Length: 338
Image 1 (cartoon, rainbow, N blue to C red):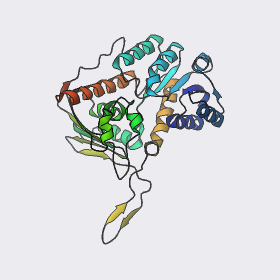
Image 2 (cartoon, one colour):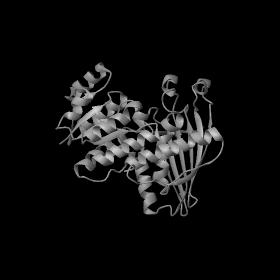
Image 3 (cartoon, rainbow, N blue to C red):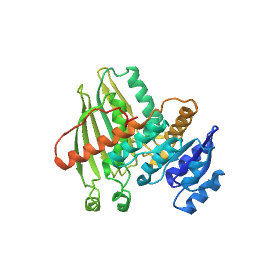
Image 4 (cartoon, rainbow, N blue to C red):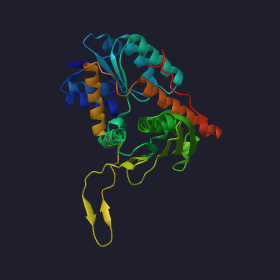
């Protein structure tokens, strides 16, 4: 039985706690959150206790932590958990600063503990099947990857102001998927960004619409398109084109019912909220983490993956500011990058 301390009792924390409770080999022992009422409710729901950080990390029965608190707390908690010898599941991003990310990875490597970064989209059944079929060679040599990611609507402007920007907050998932599907590291990136949804986003210093093109050393290409507005629901699609064919993973719908009549053919709109769209992915990723810790297996989404997503996000920010393509150095897997 792997026992957990969880930091964060917000909407993502609620999902993770429920998935722990449904997992036969895991148990939630501590809940830590600055919102005492939220922590109390979540702890009561799952038979855990409300604790502070020091108490939770000092518990010798706790073997792992889930970090699902606000982004600005992630780095400090990763370092503290590593020093306490706990296996770490950390929601993306590890931090908005590459320097702080490297400090975390140094601490993790020094402590010799596993770190899993919560890029949940890799665990969506359709996306993971597509990736497996790419690896099997179903489309031959990969030539193009197209990622469409559009939210149903804007988050609050108050959130946008502290999120780190669209590339670090939203596109970071797509940067991870791009690396995963391309099979090679991008070496060059060009980003466009606009404010087409709400002028308040521009006033907050961010974009709400973006397109990014990346190239690998062998010439493989990736196109990412993002929007903070999709009137028809949560739009999440992947396409991989190769020398022998194409693979496509489409949106998830509430039902598969289809109406066909003399005027049209219609189906349900895509699921509207990301917690619904990726509910199964959240469950599978946490089960994968528990299994990897218990069997001392490598983390399928590790520290280097978390770092490289931030590297690409920063390159996109730079490209947007300069209006020029940005060269990207290959990952440096050294003492600071486990």
